[in-house]
Image 1 (cartoon, protein in one colour):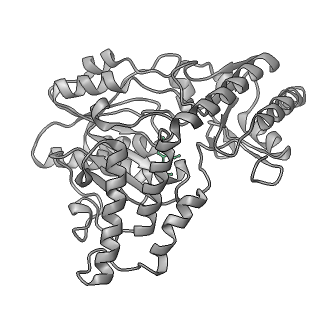
Image 2 (cartoon, protein in one colour; image 1 turned 60 degrees about the vertical axis):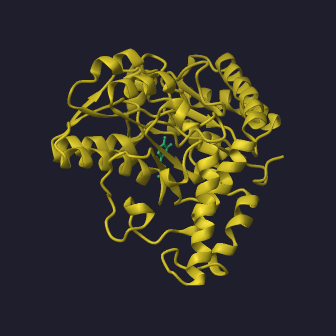
Length: 388
Ligand SMILES: Cc1ncc(COP(=O)(O)O)c(C=O)c1O
């Protein structure tokens, strides 16, 4: 049974509810332990102790040092800090101005690299992806030149679920002396996240994607990585991010990450099985439907589709009327639906690109809910098709 009356929540890639265990861990840090971590008195030191324990918990999960974790106000902020921070640092020492990324990044990455190109004169290469949204590490290798400072590749794509060959890309970046950033916001609780195994230098996470609070993110920064602060002010977070730290949010993130990792194997197995039932059921029951993203190398909770000649947003609305929350990858510009840029980059024709639907599973979901979704979706798509 779902915890949402009789509604079904299939939008866990958008956000997740705070786990009650996470909420309990955070509670003391709103009003009992409220000191400013920068204060030298006992109130401040109590808060600072909690913050460092949270950092240690995270460092244990990621297999890194405590000093390599910087708390931020979101996953978006962590991506901004990673990319803009390394670009500005390179500029300040006159070392390179070329960034390599992909056409399937979240806006937190793509708009940041666009701004660096358009306003700051950096050059940006977007390497192509194949029809499943996979990046070829060899193509990245070929794109690296003497001016390249950074490669930024999303680890698990939010729209199509494809998981990239991180180990190979990381190895190439290491061999060529180029920094490697990944947006791993969709990954905790779904795949292992050991920074050394992937050779990443910078990695962004966001607590609300794994049952932690909203407005709480982190950036892993490998030691000795040169990074200019984007937020300037005090010397918080070892000079990487000025602003009084939200201890409750950091404790929430750390608790949520520990739980997500501890429960990852069992929960991933459960979700993968429901995901595959959804994928097989939808492709079988809805004519002219196709899976988007990689059939195997995909996030364990993530099922995404395109339907010929139907707007994804209409399907989302139809499902909502039936009490099922889902999302569509297509962006709406001035009231008009536009084909998703991610699907376009994968070479999907525009007539398919408008009809994308994303169903992302999580802790609340059951097999009954999957069965109910499979029951109602074909009728919704059919009704929209006969109406238009
Ligand atoms: C892949 C990816 N990167 C970054 C973000 C942004 O994270 P936040 O909501 O914490 O700013 C999201 C959230 O949708 C995401 O899915």
